[in-house]
Amino acid sequence: MDLDVFVAAHRAEWDRLTALLRRRRRTLTGAEADELVSLYQRTATHLSQIQSSSPDPALVSRLTSLVARARSAVVGTRRATWRDAARFFTVAFPAACYRSRHWWVTTGVLFVLVVAALGWWIAATPDVRGTVAAPEELREMTRPGGAYESYYSSSPAAAFSAQVWTNNAQVAGMSLAFGALLGLPVLWVLLQNAVNVAAGVGLMASADRLDVFLGLILPHGLLELTAVFVAAGTGLRLGWTVIDPGRRTRRTALAEEGRVAIGMAIGLAVVLLLSGAIEGFVTPSGLPTWARIAIGVVAEVAFLAYVFVLGRRAVQAGETGDTVAADRQTDAPIAP
Image 1 (cartoon, rainbow, N blue to C red):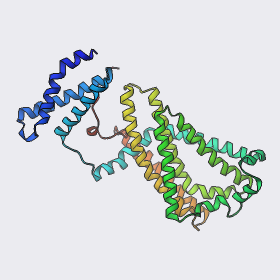
Image 2: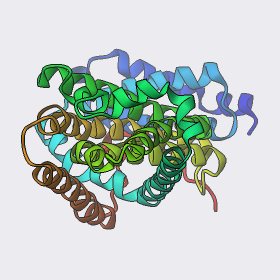
Image 3: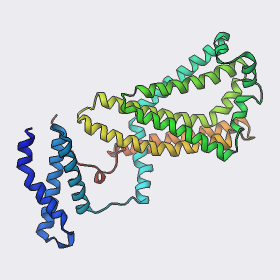
Image 4: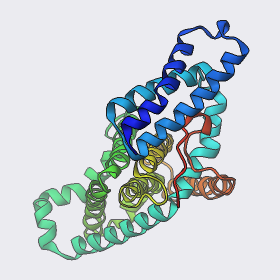
């Protein structure tokens, strides 16, 4: 595209749209209102064409502002409602989780295998345990009432839940945000978490107290780790979009998947809030181990059913987890 020729051909339309926008809508005649709508649609198409072929920053900025103003004039200012929140949690979020299921399920399986392998290595190798801490410190950590057990009751339940939620939401947010960097930092975040979990497994197993450790971590850990896997899988999927955007332009693909990732961050924050509540109130409680684990299993099964029932249904209906079409910019079609 010759940008100078394109601008010369359409400048008059943009100037006319600007002039119409300077007038209040109530002063426009019927013909002028129709003209405003037509010019808005054509200018939006012009913007998409320029972004796809000749993304001049100054021109893109000017037309983006013009299209936004025209859109506001045509459709009015849209306010979020409770219906939007209900749609997000019943359609968009489960659809986004379901669409990325192959990424986060694979991530979860590999994470468990790495934790099992590292945990066995730590439990079976005294020299490795010696690099973690001195023998007396290890005994203090793994004894009944030691660091691993007292950790969950070290603070009041409400404060502990809030602290855990903040930490886990940060990990999930990092996994989502780092996806744009080809997903490589996401792998590092996952590895760090795998090493931390494996250390607990290995050290407690070496003290013949693995059952106690699992009884402490499973009630909240099932849902918590699943949320982390979903975040990591979504981040990796976003990273792959940078490499292979498919039949979309890379700009369009990243915009779409980026909006989905932002929505995922909101949804996962709610999921992690629930797992944090379980960790703060259920894990350190006096309930029998089987009852605490049962609560964790119920929460995990409920989330998986939410994703694979509601999410599958939404995806079959054409949902992707992106914002509604009315809130998205229309892109020019891409030739196959």
